[in-house]
Image 1: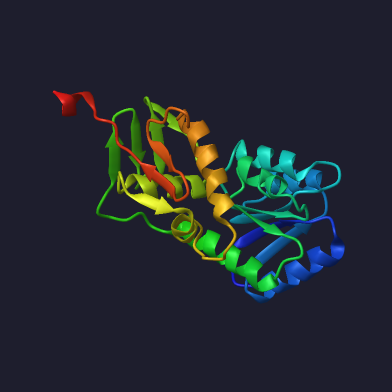
Image 2 (image 1 turned 60 degrees about the vertical axis):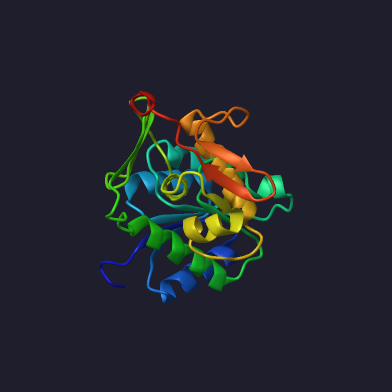
Length: 238
C-alpha cells in the first residue's frame, strides 16, 4: 500500500459486507481500517487520522447516529452513511446529522467507490482563485480559508454544506435545480438523490440561522430547486 494512500474508516456490523467492502476498497488503493460496532468506531477515530468514513446506520453498542454526532463534534471529515432502511425519511437521517452522503443496502461496490472518489476529490479541491471572499454583510464566506462567519461568529460546516453554500452564493439570484446541485456539490449524477440536497439545505439553514419561512439568504423555488439572495448592506443603501 502506498504511503500516501487515502485512509478510510469502515464501520459495518455485518462481517460479510465489511470484508467484501474492505477488499474492494483496498484493491482500489485505499488504506482501510474496519470495525464492527459503534463504540470501536469512536475509539478508532480518536486514535487515528482518516480521510473518509463509511458508517453503517444500524450498529451494536453505539448507533450510527451517535457515532456521526461524536465525529461531527470535532471534525468535518467526509462521511458516507450506509442504511438498509426503506423509508425516505429514514434514508436521509444520517444527512441531517451531518453525513455528506448515503447509500442504501444492497449497493453496488462500483457506486460506493464512485462516491468515495467524489467525496475525496471534493475535499482536496483548491478554491476557485478568482474569488477569495464573498461578503454579504452579516454573512461572510472566506473561500480560500474555508470559513463561514455569521454576524462575526464562525459557523462549522461540513465539506458538502460549504460547497453547497459557495455554489449558490457565487451567483446570487440564479436558480439551481436539485440535480444541478447534486452534480456540482456531490460530484456525480446518479438519479434519485435530489433529497440529499434538501437535507443539506435544511442543515445549512439551521447553522446559518436562516428561517425558511422568512429567508434572508437561502430561498426555495418550489418545484425547481434553490437560489441564494444577497441582502443589501447598509453601505449599499446609502
